[in-house]
Length: 314
Figure 1: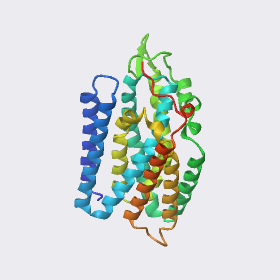
Figure 2: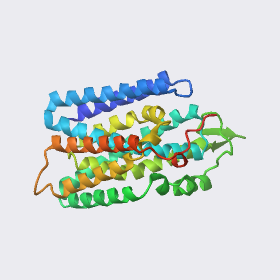
Figure 3: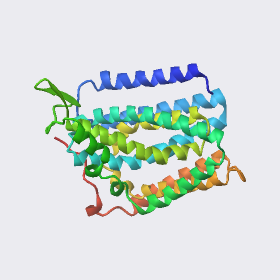
Figure 4: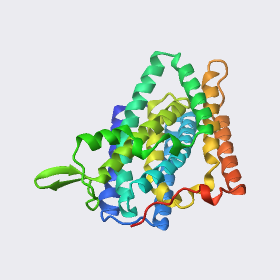
């Protein structure tokens, strides 16, 4: 499972898909319609499930279940994070036709960062067994905290320290210049407001990774399973954003469902030395919690004054 050649082939395949996405299918900047977003979402989900089947026949049912559980958790956490992306794009008034480009480069950076986090996390767990208890307590604490706070309360675009630092130390134009991140003015290079948005997206993903990486490490210690489940969940995030941006307010109880899942995974990890819960039952619990939170969201809809602003369209 740790064949270096296969790691190279997998990442080359992912880079090929990303290259086709950006330079062929989205070469021309345009507003992504719901139909297009749904088709791309379906493509990434089907591709992920096909890879899951490949793992099943290549390495057996246990790793396949770990991949599916990790993918489901990461995908669910990503949906919750989409609310934050809506807030960022609304705050910076980013036109819809440029949002795909920002999400593309933001997710590409997230793949690199998470790859590093995963390798470090797996190495630490292999060397220091007691870290599983620290991760378990962290997940329980994070789940309880998530239940009583909203993501948009924790992440305020105007107060992001990294964005403030970039604004002070790098020349930034007052207006956007098409879909460019950098532009030349009087023979000097300037960053554009879109670059600040990209910095914001990247920095918030570090916060997101602090929740999702420990949760998946609690599911599997295999770096390949953890990494690939993260990759496939993140790859479909852009399409999922445009597919759900207008209706995500319907899933307002998902936030609490994810909090319960994090606590459940944390408890599972804490008790792993005493009792190892079969992965298929863990998958059923995660699926049931997600289903209940979505059903409750539809039965008890959110009040209109609590619905966040939709993505900016200019």
